[in-house]
Image (tube, rainbow, N blue to C red; front, side, top):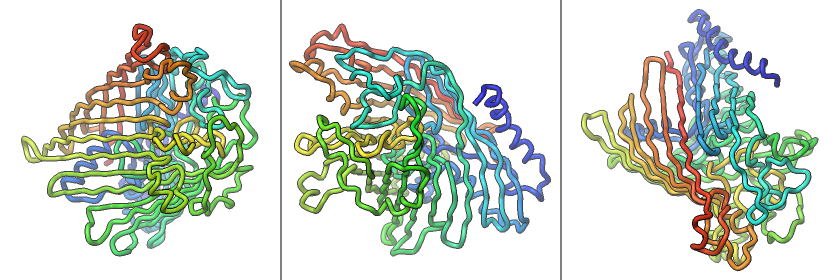
Amino acid sequence: MPTHFRALFALSLIAAPTLALAQPSSATCANGTLVTALPGGLGEENQRALTLRSGGQWSLFRGANDAARARMLSDSNPAPLRVAAVLPELLVTHQSAFPMPANDGAMWAGRGRSYSLTGGIALCGKNARWGAIIAPTYWFAENAAFDLPDNPHVVPPYRGGYSPWASRYYYMPRSLDAPRRFGPTSFSKVDPGALTLFYRASRVEVGLTTESEWWGPGQHNSLLMSSAAAGVPRAYARTARPLKAAGELDIRYFVGGMSYSDFFFEKRPADTTRSLAGLALAWRPRFEPNLTIGMARIVMAPMAGRTYLKHLLDPVIPVGTPNAVGRGDSTQYPGRDQLFSLFANWRLPEDGGEVWVEWARAELPENMNDFLDSPNHSQALTIGLQHVRPVWRRDWTVRVGGEYTQTNQSSSYRERPTGSWYTSRAVQAGFSQKGQVMGAMIGPGSVTQRIGTDFANPRHSLGLFAYRIKWDDDSFYTIPRPNGNGLCKHDVSLSWGARGATLTRAGWLEATVTSQRRLNIYWQALGLCFQNEELQIDKRNLSIEFRFRPRLR
């Protein structure tokens, strides 16, 4: 897309809401204004803590358009067609030394400054039965250069047919579209963003959407679906309100297609889409309404053309074990691949406490004996907790919490080979959308621990945090190591920072500053354990992030 066209498009994201606001009140819905908000992030954490103290429910299925859709559906005006402005949401980041993954939707935050702008217009149908949200995302990445290793001792050789920017650790047979860098220059793109068309009956909602969606209880990492990548274009069906089933039952289903980035293959293939279908259920039992337990499964497959009808039943079809092959075997048998998770969230409003867990597997056990023999085989895991209590004045609280996530291979790999999380032997490019992993932002083979504390009231928050990430151990162990060379020298980030949010007359402003020290970046130190420490390459990175979400009238 030409640069001047992208600039005009960005201006239209501001102009369209302005035109909608200029309409008379009789021609508007939802008081004339809406806003989209990516799931994940400080604003959502603050809202989650507020509902915990008040005893409110917290959905484990969250989408960028949830608040906007609810606001539209609450307006039952009988007029056949009305409009509302989707006010622009702005996200700006700066990375001083190297890229840092985040729950930032379609945007790829490379080194330097990056920003995204999401906004547009919404249409409301008669009696709130249907609606459309047209809110694309324009984003820019400075994508400044940073050092990428090319040492054959630590990086696999380049393979023809792939882009030179593709990660060499994720060639087939452990395929994943996760480029090391998105090309050599700065660039801008337009993404469908939070585009949604929906129709709601009494108990069911159906529609088409490209919004980012978050499945599961995790605050910083979700194992199957998150906002770490652009939303997947898909058709969906969901419960309009919980079904009565010895409690309350929420159901989500979709079928759609994932796209390659421009930096995976050297030449884009004729078939650029992989199917993705998902099914998730969350149940709140009558005997303990503060407990939510659920399950989710997503299945992808190669797709010739856009034959989505062939994949409608994928979430309930067995896929076998396509990745249960040793690394030395380079054969590929195209077919379906899956991720499956069980999760739970328990909220204790009277005590101000909350605990959650998501346990997932890339391979389902063949039978009960198989599960009991190796329950951790091909697993990924998130565990978290938080405690919120009042301090100072009545409306101020202090929140203390932590979360642990791991996507690296378990010890069962020694007896039973399996692939890395999000990679696939059966489907080229794996579980990724436009070059970014769809689930946990830490990506495959990684482990992270995070702690933090925040002081907050309904209008302000201020907090401190620290976290550690050990990056992609699955790739680390693929490096040839004669005599144990470099075996102890992992790639580890140690980070700490401050963050805050405030409600101004214009809207919510959030800011996060993170100082990161990355030890032995890209595993470039050679030598035996605890030798040649002076050759280790460490990097420091300063990350700054601002988010602005307009205030509704």
